[in-house]
Length: 607
Image (cartoon, rainbow, N blue to C red; front, side, top):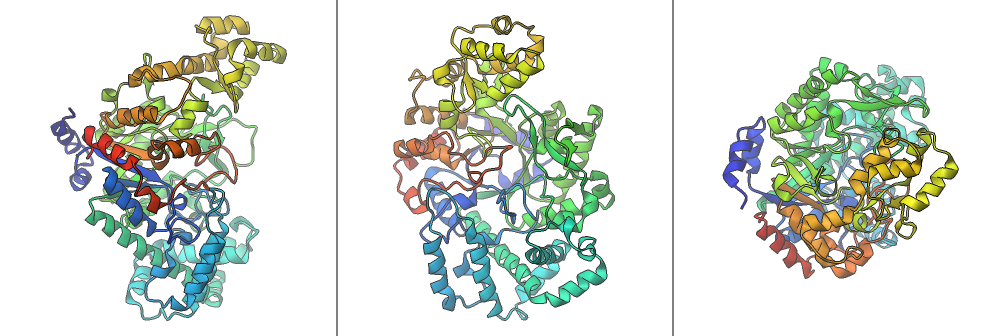
């Protein structure tokens, strides 16, 4: 049985002890959702803030006490939540219009019904035209509303002047220049000339105030949601993007805080052979530090209104971040800082400021290529990282649940990965074909021989969607090198991928202690997977809603499609960040599997 006293001794003796006293050190289960993906009978075209209340009812019935939300920040035209146009502002599409404060919405209820019908979810995808449609309706409501004497609105503007004024002006300039990024605006606006900005503010005062008003309404609704959840003993875990879009109010208003000549990303690895180039500029940390980290402190101060805990996206980027020239795709990237001995002190300086700036408990997304210093810094601070079940291995295979880090959230999937059932069906036991081809080319192997070798090394029938499934008789790395006709060292990427993926399904079933069909997928297998991850040593177990819903046979079939996922990293597609749940929030409450989920959490000591 899991020892609660050990939890107390460790967490209450860590650098975040004050945060743990607020949260408590009991083992908890959580659910992770993108808000846009859930919907109810009351939603207008997209998941809304008040839908979180219905999600909370489901959480209570299943023994879940943490709701993790993907970023709610105002997004740009790609609707990617990690590429926001502000790291402060929330997105107006999430407002529940009928519940806005200090305004008579009665004359607009017909318009609201019209939007519900027009943007009713179809084809399991969000129609993001709903965002502008809701903003247009909010504009009509705002124009008919007297806001000069609303004390709460006046106080909100004063309290958030650090970012709100710049954001609202940026939004209105962007509306007037829809096809031009801020670096292509006229010089006075681009360079924030005081006279030019002041003149623009006077001419566009009403529209600027409108954007502030929408942010106030979002503030009030999400603040009320937090209070609603607190009364029901549910914590809300917010997701704070590590970076912000190049085309954002943050970068326009604080260009000295960013290295605009560079693009952030991730180095090549066995899962993304080409690496990743995200486009967002890396921070100029020295300039941020020289101004007392006020930019970071204000972000956390604002988020504190809404969240009990916050997820530090790309936590490892606090130590060093992978960068490359913004417009050059041929120059290989590199880490910054380059010197490895600087990584830990660089990260510690930022983490210390973040921990001291907020009462929220920080949680770290420490996935990808992780520097060694990250693990002991997280342990010292008592900050939970992520132990990702399918990748959490050692030389003997999958690590047993009791070896998971106490300071971690155990997960079956993330928003950047396939759902668990699709990993099992399409990825387990395979390697990336691009990785194989690139490694072979780098080793100087003739393309014709590469094609021949694939027929020998891989099972053609089980290799699909750019994934190569190993033949059972490829029993050693030496054999791979002999077939390719090169040394193991010259194709080390392939050899490493082989060690990770060969007989992966057999190893996983052995890890679960399950003797079911290796080639099939069943709700029983999903249940075994969820039981294992919840029985882990991790203080938190936070699963994507889709992985919970896969316990239902009908939804398992709907979710178990290759292209059914939240996001494919390194790709730009209308399928990213648009997927809807397979079931409404009202119908979720009646699912027979809710009792099963509740029992899994009870049996693992997470109830």
